[in-house]
Image 1 (tube, rainbow, N blue to C red):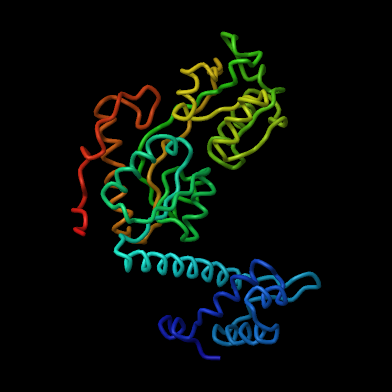
Image 2 (image 1 turned 180 degrees about the horizontal axis):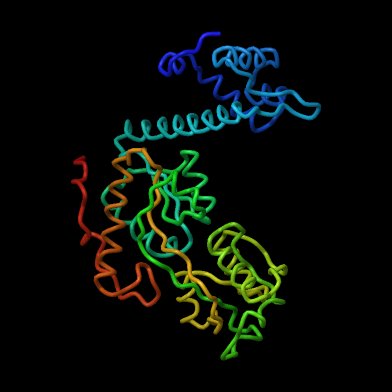
Length: 341
């Protein structure tokens, strides 16, 4: 079977083929795939056979339990998912633009920025572009980087969890974050003046799931101190769940100071006198290598960098605890003039 050049190959691919490969890669079952795509199983089989004929390679192996993607098939499944995601985002942005809007922006952010820096940057962007659709995913860096790699996000404000990620993504550091161990004001340890890790090993914790950078730092600190890995814990990437488990379930946790400083100042939480060796690497702007930044993403980043630069000029950690009152959002520079209506 002759090989097709890249342009010829892409011209032969069909949207329905990509959809089928995406769903079959997820379900591993041709019957369920056909049902999900609202077609007969013979029709689904024919689409798969046509695609394999076009590519000149087998994409799935039948086993007694499921249809499993071959090594090349897994590559095709990954491409199909990214292509479909890009297509859906294109369609949504096009519909927004046709209504007189400014398209869409999909961004991800770690918790340290989600409580203060990110909302202020978004507020300024919405002031300048009120009809832009903005989608925000706030979770741990490892999950954000995975979503960015799948093409589901335009950019991430977070960290690169592994050294391998540096080959796939560009990183521009923004700031560091200070981590605080904390508990409810009613917690038995709330009045202690000194704590070490040995005092904390048997307590119930609520922490980010592994392998997030923050969780890795805590696990490494316990291991370096010769202590067993924490096993009395709840894992969640939700700020809301974390704060309420500390507040109502007697648990302890560790989060960026930006998230808990206000409650500590108000007396609801107490910062525990616990030092953890090591520190998180700076968080920053993560984008995909070789992918041109969209105008909407570039505009958001200009606003974000202006906020960070202003706070650094005032001697403050961006979004940090104890910030001075901020000037009006319209004091920020506008990257381009708003569209006249």
